Length: 117
Image 1 (cartoon, rainbow, N blue to C red):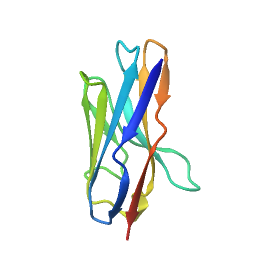
Image 2: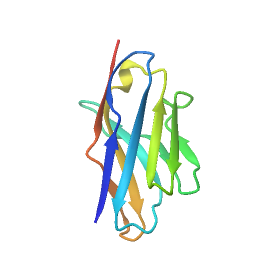
Image 3: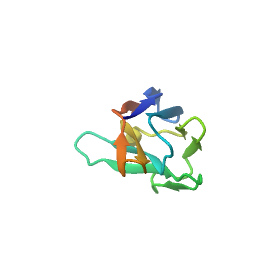
Image 4: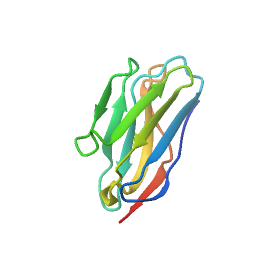
């Protein structure tokens, strides 16, 4: 099967930086789009950034110019560099990977990011 595992969350002061990593593993021949989503308490899960297999990125307006998503296809990993963090960035961040072989998305369990003011 497929596993998706996030790492790199933590507590940081406003204006600080964090780097998230996500690794996909299992019986995978190819991976489609991979992305980061977040869910704050009492809110719906929302797209933060997504990157296609051709490395073309998409960003939510709220993080554009602050967050950078990248991808290493050989390692089956994506990363997200988060700069100029704000308290409103506080959320659980989830990684998602689309696996064409199984025709579905796989989600990680999430990593907590907390930004203090």
